[in-house]
Length: 159
Image 1 (spheres, rainbow, N blue to C red):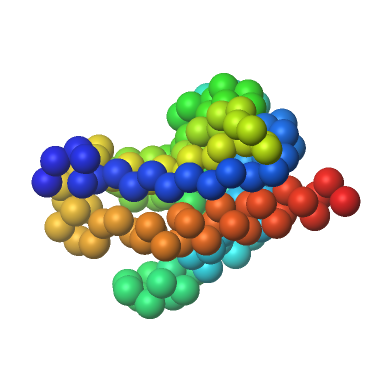
Image 2 (image 1 turned 45 degrees about the vertical axis):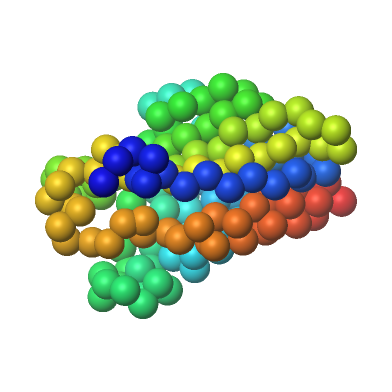
């Protein structure tokens, strides 16, 4: 499978400044607030400020109905961080090798607000994991829905 088929990108114009959107994306609770997959239950940690920052997320894979993992914890590890422009992360759990899939957002100024692109890249996932799970874990429809929830969350936080 080529890299082009191992990455999903979806975009949405959000009528808000990049800073307001980025504030949600750097807040561990913001990740839970905007999750459309249903897997993120809660988060613990401080807002992230740089690559290497981490926070804990309590997960429930049962929301996807694909693999009976039940409830578990992962650590989100920030891999890209450019304020008001891009944030990306991978997840680590107590398993080796790490899965190494990457989630992220790019923010670009646009007429009427900020163009937000959500991406999910599983091109670096170890073959062991590709043999055990179906990728993408999160479908394109969930990424699209998350962008809609992000817009609503940014609007509510501004109110």
